[in-house]
Length: 332
Image (cartoon, rainbow, N blue to C red; front, side):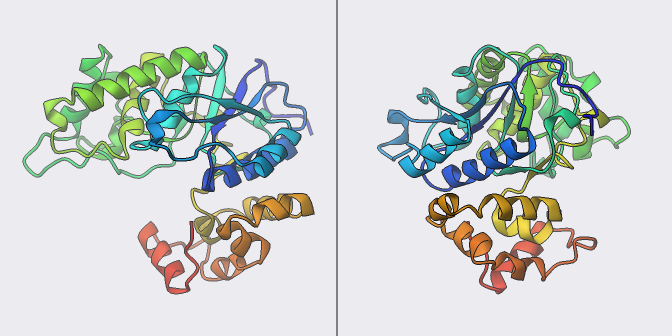
């Protein structure tokens, strides 16, 4: 079957991994990507953080995982954290971009599995965008203000960006969805180094010179998701259109935690992870990570899946997590 959209431009795919949970997730990421994109001609990059800002913590990907990633055609690209690190690991995705080639890119969180080819989505790198699979986690306006408009507008004003055109006027004033807010689980742009440098500039400014309007707001862990819409707007981008529906859809699944994958994600995502974990050389390595060992390899994820009706899921994720915890199957 021919792809819906031809891949018209060479680009790179990147995720971030380090010792621990992320390295095992990166193995699932890379293996599923290669299975669904066997003819991908760009670079598949696993960025690996490091340096003194990790306070002595080991970040180097273990040799067994490293060997399998390379066998599957991934490039491991070390970079040294200059700004973030142990105190704010979400900053990895920002600093990793500055170490990439100055070429078009799409970043994915490592807890992503691929169930379709990227050629099924139309990536217009001159119009950057990001995932809308998010909840109204930030900001949390205090009772007596400032409200959503004042909080978001002060950030656009700080960086000399036009604010009004970013509003979704189909949503009511002072409702969180009216304001451009993304999940940073995937995003893309035309030049990784430039995008990353601006992302870093904006994030540092918000952190180090926090506007008065944000005095009551938490920046941890939300800093990356606060700065991301500003960066995207600065490059003339915006919310994703229907040509990108395959991301967070039939092409990629950002599952976030394996128990949540089994609870609510499509059968195709579960089947993909279980299939790519089967080869003995892969299984031997993945078993070193307890959640994969128990849920995927030992099959206990099926018990989680049986607890829920995917067509009638609880509206609040907290209910899903508590249900899994009661069964003693929540692990990450």
